[in-house]
Amino acid sequence: MGLMKVPLWRLALVFAQMGASGFGTSMLPYYRSRLVEELGWVSEDEFLRALKIGQALPGLNATNMSVIFGDKLAGPVGAFVATVAVLLPGALSLCAMGAFYLTHQNDPGLDRALDGVAAAACAVLLTTTWRLGKKQLMSPQVVMVASTAIAVGYFRVSLPLALLVLVPISVWSCRPKERK
Amino acid sequence: MNSTLTHLAMVFGGLSLLAIGGGSSLLPEMQSVCVANGWTTPEQFSETYSLGQVAPGPPMTMVVLLGYHAAGWMGALVVLLAFFTPACALTWGAARLWDRFADSPWRQALEDGLAPISIGLLLSGVFAVGQAAIKDSLTVTLALVALVLALWKNPSPALLVLGSGLIAFLGSLLGT
Image 1: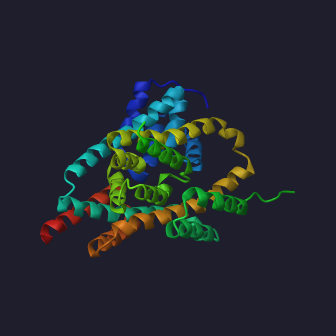
Image 2: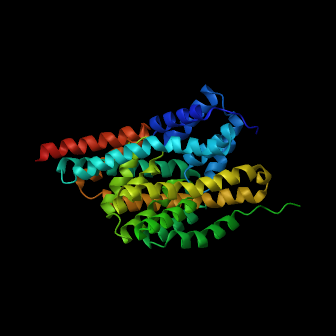
Image 3: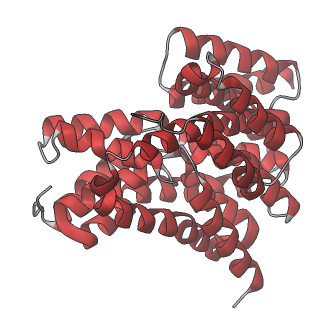
């Protein structure tokens, strides 16, 4: 994958624009249509490779991918600039919302509006879980799904401890088959 | 240096590296930690999470508000840096080495093995956020309607969440 020089200001602008107009799970399709289809900065194969890496490594998929694309397009500084740019619009609007919320904290109407927002957000998260996890939920792996959910959700086992125990078991059960 | 800020940096920096399969798998642990340290109440946590759905960009950017709840604007800045720097640095390094391991059979095993755990964590995240958010007949109804719409019509999550907020707001005007 050769280094392609895109001016930093251009990189910042494109990623900031994606950060300002993509929402939630639509971030990744948005990366694709903008970077692969419209700008031609990233090839289809590079996109899929970055998606795989982004999902396999810890962290947010959207920022992991901004690091990979920024690095490809303008080196290490590009990775930094692309990531800051994609996060900045959301971070600033959240700060504005937070400030507004704190000055109107005792407003019953706003309280109720947030209750409504939170209720629907749960439904969205459950839908995402179902879409991402259909394969695991419909196979023997559902045992692993349930063990994790019960340990962390019900017994409140701390995440580092849960991962330390569950990851080796789960990865071992998926170990490569011996080939002759 | 302020001890809350140091604590925030360590907690969110550590969480960043435990986010397998995307940031939402961190929700249950993040909620426990924020509540245990008195940074937010469970309700504030759910509300903050919901604001993340309404703001542009990756929803987990909402960690800035958790930092703000804990220690004001400095808290917001510290959490933002702590939450994104370690995982991004790791990705930057690992992406350059990736192709060397692309064909290793263990890489596939790792992916297959991590998938059910991240789904389990997402489920417990639904539970953690839902416990605080779904508390009366209105929120139960809104959540169910949103669930049906999301599965059936697949609208933009931001629209769904805003619409539900608007209905609850109008309901409160009528109710009082």
